[in-house]
Structure formats: C-alpha cells, structure tokens
Amino acid sequence: MSQTENPARPAVRILRFDRVQRIAHWANAALFGILMATALPLYFGSLSTVVGRRHLVAEIHLWAGIALPVPIIGSLIGPWGARLRRDVRRIDLWTRDEIRWLRNLGSTTPMLDKYNPGQKLNAIFTAGAVVVMLATGSVMQWFGLFPLTWRTGATFVHDAVAFAVFVVVFTRP
Ligand code: HEM
Image 1 (cartoon, helix red, strand yellow):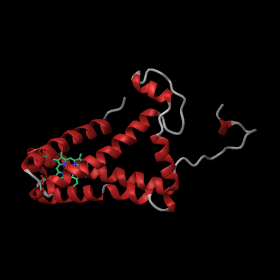
Image 2 (cartoon, rainbow, N blue to C red):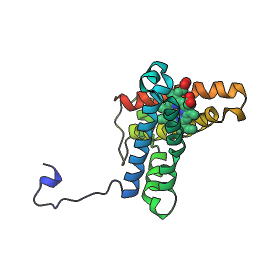
Image 3 (cartoon, protein in one colour):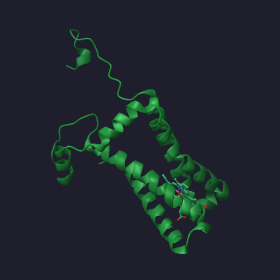
Image 4 (tube, rainbow, N blue to C red):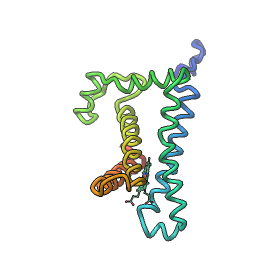
C-alpha cells in the first residue's frame, strides 16, 4: 500500500521542482524542439524543397540557437535560482556507487538520491550539447571571422552532435 493510500498517514507533497525549474525546463525543451525541427530541412536538401522558405527556416534556427542558453542562465543566476543551483550540485556529485554503475554499464544498483546516474548523464549531455552547438553554430553563422578549417570542423561537429541529440531524444534504454 502506498503512503497516499494509508489512511493512518496523511499524504505528504514533496516539491521536486519549483516554478523557476519548470519554466527553465519547458523553455529549454521548446527551444530544442524548434532547433531539431528546423535542423531537418537545413540538413536534408530534399526536405528543404518540400518545406520551402529555407532562409526563414535558417533564421528561426539561428535565433532559437542564440536563445538556447537564456533559460538556463536566467534561472541559475539570482536568488530565484537557489533550488536549481542545488540540483546542479547534486548532478555534479558522483558517489563511488554511481561510478561503479557507470563502469559496469548499468548492471549494478546504486543508492539513489534525487537523480539517478542516467538522469545525471542526460543533464550533463544536454549542458554540453548547448555549449558545443552554440560555439559551432556561431562559427557557421559568422564564418567570415574564422579560417576555412574551423568552418569545416565546426560544421562536422555541429552535424555529429545534432545526430547525437536526435538519438538521445528519440531512443530510450
Ligand atoms: C539542438 C540543437 C541543434 C541542432 C540539432 C542543430 C542542427 C543543425 C543541423 C543538422 C544543421 C545543418 C548543417 C548542415 O547543413 O550540414 C544546422 C545548421 C546550422 N545551425 Fe544548428 N543545430 C542546433 C543548435 C544550433 C545553435 C545553438 C546554433 C547557434 C548559433 C545553431 C546555428 C546553426 C547555423 C548558423 C546553421 C547553418 C544554417 C544554414 O545553413 O544557413 N544551431 N544545425
């Protein structure tokens, strides 16, 4: 019998995420959604012909990309970000148990805190992807400022991380 079904014990509501965290989460998810949707016609020329207005699609992609760090940074700074900062410290902390879980590719059962190691990995991947996509996307946009090798490398990394983002979003273990 769960705690909520037990008449002897009153139900306790646990605040897992506050309003700031929820807004940051959904704003981030929406921006990722826009970036992924606009990425497809940018990458697949045939799709671009069907969708049309490639320039507009590229503009939406660029501005959604530039906005990508805003929800994260905006919700981390200031007094309103205390709970999110505490969660970032939780994600940053890996116990021996969790490292063993990682080494054994998930076959052990670690003692769990608020986040399990898979959720921590997902958060780290998302934060890393934001930084890498912003950096490589900027080189692709303001290509005149960079040598040719940088542009080629940035496009390759942007595409590779984009592929990883699609895999992580659309596959479940
Ligand atoms: C979820 C994140 C993102 C995904 C999945 C994604 C994916 C892609 C893909 C697949 C392309 C096509 C590349 C090619 O033609 O080989 C592209 C182009 C581009 N992306 Fe992103 N991207 C993301 C984030 C960003 C961010 C943060 C920026 C920030 C500046 C950005 C800026 C650009 C630019 C400038 C282009 C070139 C557009 C054009 O061809 O006119 N992207 N992106």
